Length: 326
Image (cartoon, rainbow, N blue to C red; front, top):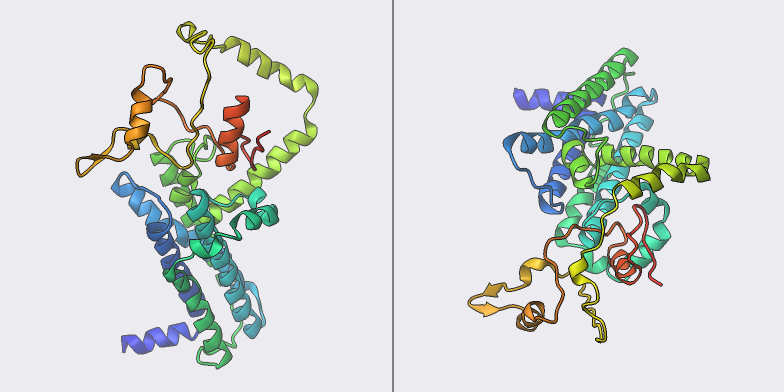
């Protein structure tokens, strides 16, 4: 009896929407726990992580409820579902390479990104990637062969608006709880993982689009006198160099060792009693070596190019795009 009611519900436009929202919710959670590194430090963060895809997915795919023509509404819903899947999957591929999420500038500069990923794109793919696309193919075939019945009844605008309102309300609750656990979530952003962990990929993309638009407007309206507050801030917060290091390399050949994708924990690390990096350990502890273990991550989206530019010119990487070393 219950199975018959479920089938009857799925044969309605609202049932089709529910199916798409549920499938994308499962798909997003799969990406969260399989491909992204969204560590949750407590139970509340885990619950937010599990629930955050629902409201935005319902809001976006719910557009199909406003389309009066029955066949068109189903296909538009599936197209939106596919576009949302593409956004999620491209972020998965991008994350595997850069441990970051695609920004609007990255999307607009697709030709440069694709050039950087073209040789390694196949290596970045995994066997389970088929799970991101398989359901879209199945749903399209079920629609084409009329296994999924098209509900010919027009959906009430009042009910459509009600569902949209529910989605907005759920997003507001999600945002409020997120702000309680992470104050100034949207105003004090230095790690994109927080936005995705608390609010999801769709919200991050919209948020980044708004920030990008605002930044472009600020640049367009910038004047030379806007630098005065910056200069004053630098003067007030000037940190003098450590005098004990002055002239330590005078009269010596300076050799800089720059390693790709190497982390501090490997220094002096032993595996089964054997040093993993014995030669680097000897250099690190040599009295003629200058090394520092307490530092902050200084590169942006450019990663390697930012690090090279900073090492050679002492200039920080750009907040958007990549720095090109001289």
